[in-house]
Image (cartoon, rainbow, N blue to C red; front, side, top):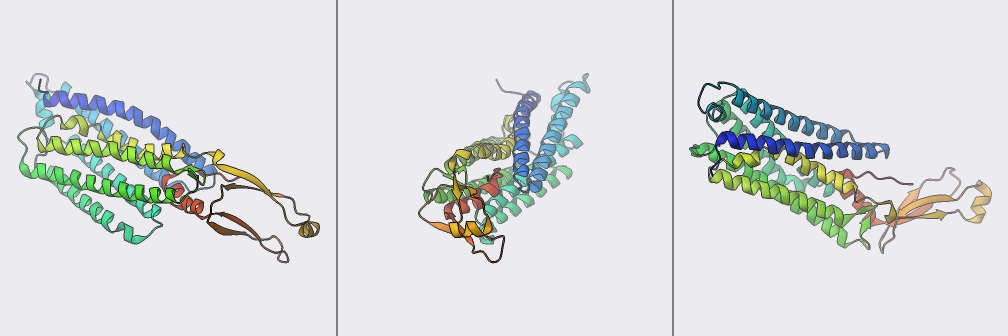
Length: 343
C-alpha cells in the first residue's frame, strides 16, 4: 500500500525522535570523553564547541519538525487533506528553517571530517586540495538549493517534482557522498599503514585496529543512507522522507560514535612501568630518587627523548621510546579526541 505524504512525514518524525534519543546518549558520552581529556591536560575547547553546535542544530531540527507535524494535523481540520496541502507548501517558514538546519549540519560535519584528514596527515596542506574542492562545491550547491526555496521553486516532495529542483537535490548528496568516501579512505589508509609498522596491536595506549573498525563502520552506515537517499530522490519516491527526516540525529550519532568508541580503545594495560635510576656516582652527589616511568612497549626503531636536568652541572638523562608510538599519538589521539594519561 502506497503511503501518503502526511503519513510519511508522521512516521519520519517518529523515527527522528527515536534516533534523537539514541544520539542524546552518545552526546552525554562525548561530554564524558571531553571531560576526561580536559583532566588529562589536553585542550578540549574546539571539540566542545563543535559538539554543542551540532547538538543545538539537531535539537532545533527535531523541534521544528514536531511543530510542523502539530500544525499540519491540527490546523484547518474542516479542509479535506489539509495535512497533505501543508506539507506540499514549501514556502512556509518552518519548512525553510528545517532545510537550512539540515544543510548547515551537513556542512559542519563535512568540514570537521576534512579537518580530521588534515590532522591525521600531519597538517600537510596538499592533503586538503581535493577535500576542500568538494567542500566548497557542497557549500555552493547548498546555497543554490536554499535559494530555490526562498525563490519559490518547489523541491523534492514525492511525485511531480520539477527536474531542476531534483537535480540540485541529487547534486548536493552526490558531492557529500564523494567527500565522505574520499576522506574515509584517506583516514583508513593512514591508520592501516601506521598499524603495519607497529610491533603490537596498540600504540600509545590506543588499539589501532579498533579505531580503524570504528571509522569504517561509521562511514558504511552514513554511505548506505546517502545512497538510499539519492536512489529514492531519483525515483521521486515519497518514502524519501523516511530517511531524510531522521538523518540529522543519525549524522550526530556517526560523529559522536567515532569519538566515544575510539576512547574505549584506550587501555592502560598496553603500557608497562619501569624504574629508572641514575648511576651511583651521580646519586651520591644529587640525592636523586628513582624515577618511575610509564612507557609503551618498545619496538625495533626508537626515538630519543631528552629530559632536562635540574642542575646545569649534571649530564642529560635520555629515554628511548618507539617512534611509531609517538607518531600514533599525533595521528590518532589528536584527531579522535582520545583522552591520554601518563603516569
